[in-house]
Image (cartoon, rainbow, N blue to C red; front, side):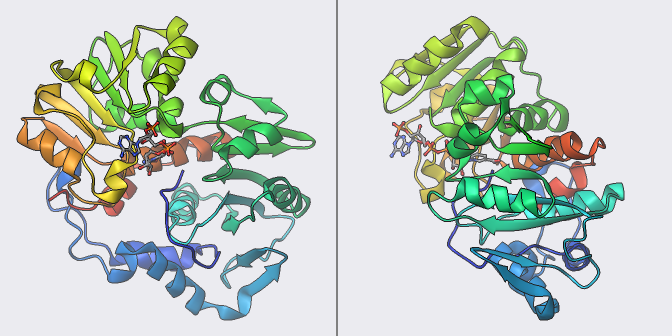
Length: 355
Ligand code: NDP
């Protein structure tokens, strides 16, 4: 999934260009996620819009228009050869999407021959865009805003995760079948448990927000067996509806922010969109237990007000959502290609300092 971004042209990122970007980045100076130092990174690499412009400038002859979809292929990649498996992210806007760069990195690292492009679809045009992509040989897609519900409606089969989340962020095409998944939540728990070494089992978890992202993370979180998972949301009815839907899956409590003001938690996840606007969700310093993990799903924003409050309240780890983004992409890549890419180095390269 991608974060909201400004509109931009729709291009794919060539592996060749991404190799250049990767080599322009400076390795982290220290060994913990929130302290990665990217000061040596070129402006291009720290701004995905610039990144795309750079890629486009490297091979303008390869740009061609297909209806509302615009493809860009680097000279070192076959142009929609039937021999080359094609993948895409479909959403709008996609000007700042990191998905083409992430999948190009995975393809290079695992030696997989594929192309991955970004396709902006018009309102009401998701199904037609996907049909055209499939007709041209498309094997799978990531789906981002605003089409996650359209993708669920388009699918011929939904996984448990996608069905319960009510949203799809990944599809695989096999003949007439369009199989749908939602890897957002798995990406988050993988990042928390594998990368950050923070087990969820037996922990007290507070989930802020009850929007699309929160829905997607509930099942994978509950499957890890937390002592309790509390959902707090401004619109309490949305939180209680989620509790009713997921109640059979674990110890789930729902309420208002005021209900949890005096409770403390081992893991606090900010799944509201407030950090995108530099706003602090209505949490209190008391919500953060000593040694807790504070995780903001937003990425690329540095130390958000939520993470700052958590750090000042004594949280052991404060982390943004770049690891979740890369891990959900890795799940999709493995599902499509049958090979698991490494994620740690890429997460480190894409992380910004939380200062
Ligand atoms: P939605 O719009 O579906 O949900 C937004 C949530 O934020 C709702 O719970 C909403 O509450 C709450 N909210 C918004 N404004 C306020 C406010 N002023 N006061 C209190 N609560 C507020 O967004 P998503 O769930 O799709 O995305 C949430 C965040 O997660 C975004 O920042 C997104 O970028 C990030 N994200 C990151 C991913 C990653 O891979 N790292 C993947 C997916 C998302 P209410 O219901 O009351 O309106």
